[in-house]
Image (cartoon, rainbow, N blue to C red; front, side, top):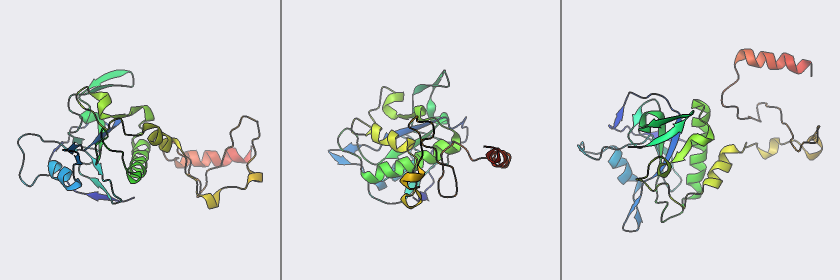
Length: 221
């Protein structure tokens, strides 16, 4: 996946933290999905708008192409509006400055999202979960954080999305053979060691000290 940078004018630099990811849709009009270029023009108009100033960090088109980024992760985009959610046991209001907003081109009340959109969304969200240590329970739809919005809508497949986030992709050519997969304690779980081919998601990269500790610990297994 690749990301294309198109800067929006609509943002603040007052961000508190990236604690959530909020998923939106771009909507439709008269049964037709709003165009990608139309969405970009809302976030970066040719003439400055005094009203309806909106933006999000990312836009994912329906067709296969680069993901568009319009606001930096460390800046506050204007996508959540009046909103609230419980974060680490505390109910927070106005979530713009605590979240990353991702727009899916489409309307989840009328149309199913494309396979590419799920693939791109899963890829992007996995990066942000790891980079900012965002738990899966704090990835929410716009409709969940406010009663005023319907997106991403009932046709967004949350099961497919969450299953993609929790799966570890291991290249088939690098998988051990069946006789190498040994369930040593009979609990139904087979552990793979992390190496250059198998990357086990951990939420952060191992530090040099942790790596050295793991090496010496492995000598005494």
